[in-house]
Length: 63
Figure 1 (cartoon, rainbow, N blue to C red):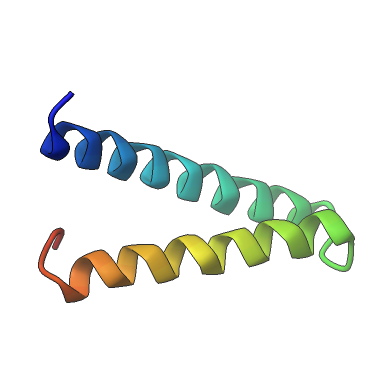
Figure 2 (figure 1 turned 180 degrees about the vertical axis):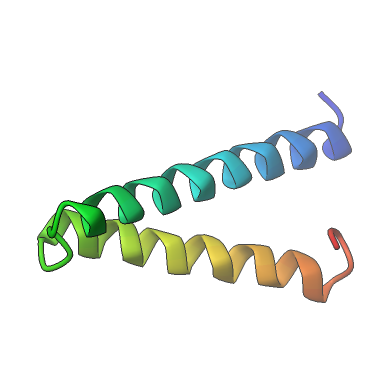
């Protein structure tokens, strides 16, 4: 697999994971479980994924 293909695969995985994390955060919030460790873990993961995506944007790899 070439480098660009690896990057595209990683980007797709990060995007899918970010969507999953957001959905779980919303599900837990609606269930009134926004004080749980699970909610906080998803929130931490969301912030980490946002940091990665912001780096990609800063370097012009994505829009």
